[in-house]
Amino acid sequence: MSDSAVIAVQAPPERFNFAGHLLELNAGRGARPAYIDDLGVLGYGELAERVRRVAAGLRKLGIRREERVLLLMHDCNHWPVAFLGCLYAGIVPVAVNTLLTADDYAYMLAHSRAQAALVSAPLLDTLRAAMTRGPHELGPLIVSRAAAGSALPQGALDFDAWLDAADAAAEPADTAADDIGFWLYSSGSTGRPKGTVHTHGNLYWTAELYGKPILGLTESDVCFSAAKLFFAYGLGNALSFPLSVGASVMLMAERPTPDAVFRRWVGEVHGTKPTVFFGAPTGYAGILASPRLPAKSQVALRLCSSAGEALPREIGERFDAHFGCQIVDGIGSTEMLHIFLSNRPGDLRYGTTGKPVPGYDVELRDEDGRVVEPAEQVGDLYIAGPSAALMYWGNRARSQETFRGTWTKSGDKYYRDADGYYVYAGRSDDMLKVSGQYVSPFEVESTLMQHDAVLEAAVIGIDDANGLTRAKAFVVLKDPVQAGDDLAEELKAFVKGRLAPHKYPRQVSFIDELPKTATGKIQRFKLRELERQA
Image (tube, rainbow, N blue to C red; front, side, top):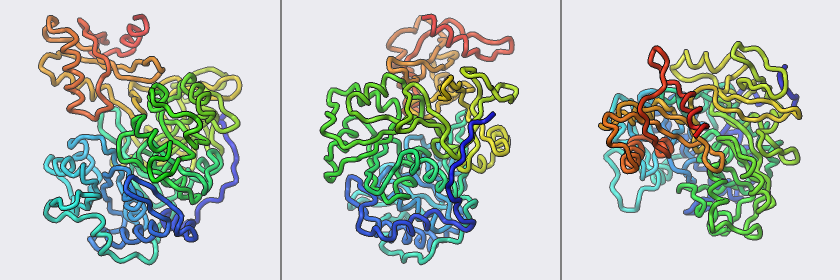
């Protein structure tokens, strides 16, 4: 049987534009802060005006309904303006990870056929490098927060100047709730990202089913997400959830180091203190380990959220003991857009992922697709709910593998304890989740084998002292005499220089040969067994 629950949430109307919906909801909050970033405060009234200007500005540039626009921007007030402006115009923003390489963006440009790009100035050179590495249809480049007096490439537009020159669109595009609204890229098992296609209605459903009833967000809250807006998790945390209740949002362009987080927790940015914080287990572990951890009296936190990977019990309990503030741990996915299985205030058990969010059905199935009934039996996690993506763009085989009628296969394994709480048991395949982001072992292995000293390589996940997953590489050298700490550090740097930073192996072990099947396939499970015995 499935874990199902009935919840009385009114569906969006058939004709529905999510950006128009948010602007209408907040029409009476003109002076109230919507977004607070390092450079200033954006009120709800100004947000609405700028969203309408982006919509009109994109149309004037010749971008048409349903065409794609690349959104490669750091978290700042320009990001929600750009994203919502696209939705308002019926144009499809493709929000992408800012930590990737030029090769990654070259693939995304060709795959999405993006007609324009909204890009942060520090990322412009990487994007332009991507444009030289393959076919694309990219036209105008709109550059956010270029340094004063800096020269932009020929044909590129300054975001603020472009916006100031645009009229404001009077009405949102006449879109349907089931129309394609936006894309997010999800990592693929071969390292190729998958263009995950979501609707206007999906954003509505996550806010109505999770942001409001589970987190209990209100307009008095100030939300701050360490997870960036380009993540499905961050998009809910810092856009659809708070804007659906008229709350304020704090945005941070820099990396979410403990010190950067602390500065905002204690009110050093515009004197504002967040009341709700969204992070991942890796971040919470770093926060607790910092010698500059603020006292409970210095912060205004009432609730914290965690997702991206399973939250170790010890981290949750230590954080709760220090701040008197619970961390509500849950699991979501790019495919489901946000959290569908979660602890909740008043019903929280650290070491578990909680229970199904009302409005979602959850099943555990065995390898033959049969539902797993007995408690504490591991099965593959399947979800059914109204926020599921439509498909992976241009990838029929993977779409059929993941989206199975009304059900979505998560790729995670879970068991349900005797009290009905779900406990994470690992990934269904060899994909690793490091710092909340998927890492393909194949991609890391392929990169390691580009090094002159490496003959073969295999990558697995290991748990650190905090119970968080890190990548470890087992390497067979062409000349075993070269093995040593110096080469291990060289290999780490080699991968780090070629892939996104979170993908490099934190440990490197040299091995005489890799365990393989008769057909030559690497048996990673044997390496995991070897690691457990060490």
